[in-house]
Image 1 (tube, one colour):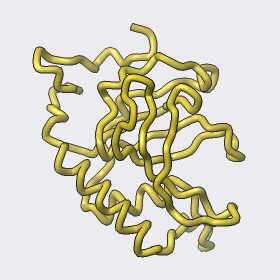
Image 2 (image 1 turned 60 degrees about the vertical axis):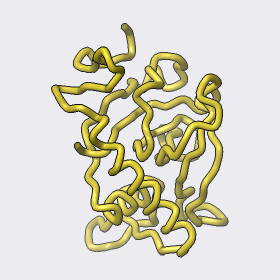
Image 3 (image 1 turned 45 degrees about the vertical axis):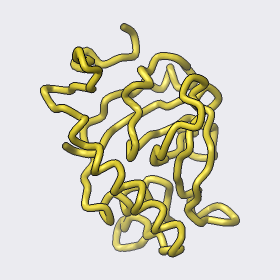
Length: 168
């Protein structure tokens, strides 16, 4: 099927399999990631940017997601879904059964970055049938209020362009 990686399959029990890894085993890690994200939001923890040439850069959305994964003691797993630059606004090429609690998603929301993408942590479905979810994210230091937050995303309007789950 176009847009789906050939190494991905669903077994008879609908467990996502990727190179022989059973992602039903990552459920606890997903919960830990969501808890760490919420703790970061409540505690208003500072987000550190990457250091380049000895100078700390302004923090971005992916810096916060990385910090949350680190606080949860979890590493990012393999990328299960990704679209090319020419397909950025394509909708419907993702199997939404792959989206799980704690997933690191890139969504195309047309923000000010070069590619118009934003990193978020998937928390839960609000309306799975219509692809509306609760996510957590950090808007980045360039915003007026750069605090991490919980918010709603309609994936039909802001499609997922990259998906990875916690490392099993």
